[in-house]
Image (cartoon, rainbow, N blue to C red; front, side):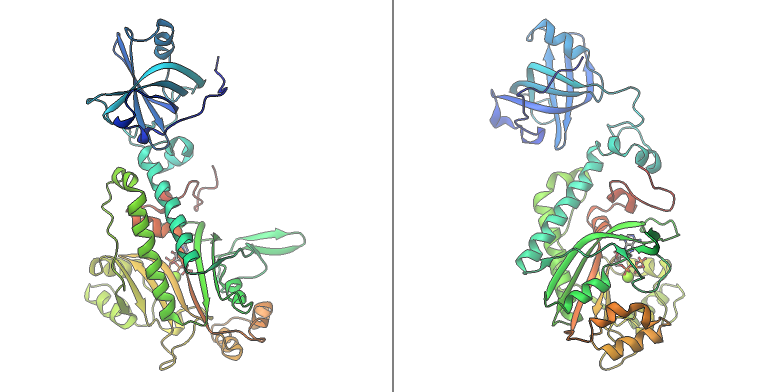
Length: 439
Ligand code: ATP
Ligand code: MG
């Protein structure tokens, strides 16, 4: 038999219950984290979103009926407790609750498919199979508190900078870069794809006169390989600014990264502590390392890298050994960057593209883009793409396209760099990877 909620509402989350509330009547709601029955006294640890509170039930101080009800509680049952705050030096938060009334809102089947205390090790696959339970763990939930705050700070920062948030379609007719990383879908009688990047739409928006736009939305990539850094569905934080070049794009990016980290440090102290992360706010400007120097550094570390190659995993790792925090790689060869990247004005072989790295992890790619129609068509041809299949995109370059630049940040990669988790799956509620489509 379960109780109904009636007019009970939570008055506090556990972490807000401090000594100052001594003697007050409060209502907590959450799950039975642990229960210890010592005969004459029962300790229940109630867990809610923000913490854990000890409910102390001494048989001598509470009614026999209440004592019996508490005795019957089982792990992960959903309860509401009305009680008085009492100081208790031995309790985890220095306070405990002496219950006056309790509501049993729902039970939980036992045994649980997954331990929720974090005391029993479980493999990531087992954890993801029962993700809703896994997310009850404080060290897992902490990652999402931080990720949520990160998005909040980014939106706040971009609002201050007068950017407009936009939404572009995710059902698209053709590839962004003509790549193979596309998920085909059936769109009535046509073939279509899930969008791998808002790149082309962001650029068309530059011809709209919106000037400063950003989008936070999913990207879908049919990455065949199974790595700790790739997902098949990720969230991309994309930004594009008219009348700017790649230097401007790097400046706003490093400022955004710094501000988001500062904000997370300020507002997620407890989550960072749970994760044992000593978060450092990076100084700006971030170091800029030219691609030519990257080749030298990587080679000096004994890793084979020829000029004109993208960074292999081994090359990224070699860079991570030399560079400790966030840094840009600039001066990329035009040949290995996408067709829409502007070639350098002095040396067209070197492009106006950059990557933002955190140690050995790519966080973002960006560039000044080509705004000249003829050059854009030429670049497509040079890269073996057929301009005809980009017709609607190309049209936008015929009627007054301003110079522009921008970037895309992988939200999960950025979260990895803040939280220090090594597997990108840790930063997604319900990850999609090569083998996983449920839950
Ligand atoms: P990588 O070389 O690491 O596979 P990429 O160069 O293919 O990444 P971009 O097309 O430059 O990726 O996308 C911009 C950003 O989006 C990347 O820097 C990364 O942060 C993020 N990103 C791209 N693909 C993925 C993915 N499969 N899973 C998670 N994040 C991704
Ligand atoms: Mg990239």
